[in-house]
Length: 204
Image (cartoon, rainbow, N blue to C red; front, side, top):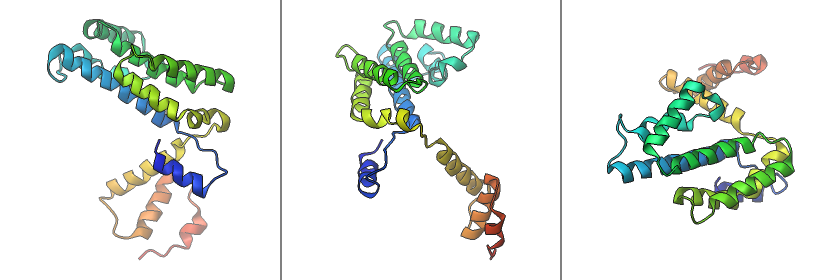
């Protein structure tokens, strides 16, 4: 979600459909949720989160997908929010994050568009927490490119996964001074290497 990247792609690949990756949308919603939690924590206690504070104790559960919470952890989250979130601001931000996750599960593009419009309209209301209004403004700005996911069904997940794998290869080896060795190791760790390519590489 970068204007600079979007501008470059518009010039270099004018016919390509630009898709805002779902990872960044959910990350943005999670950041807004955590912002609400941190603000309320400070307003209610006068200090940053501590081990015994309910809102601080809920932080890891809040970032998890609701469908991945079992009955025990769901009850724990509800209890922590009852204690630390009397006005349900954090609970609201959590539901928004979950709603955006559900948006990506929609199979009908028209239903998905209506669903996203409803989310943006709701969190843009003046009565909403500032963090959610900012989120709504961002979602509205990138609306078309977010919706493009349902047209193309494309995600940058596999590419990000390979990038992380390559970084791990470098970290485990404590760095490489020779690029070709680094390349070979990355291909081997990545699986299904092109052995013809590997055979053509001369290790120095």
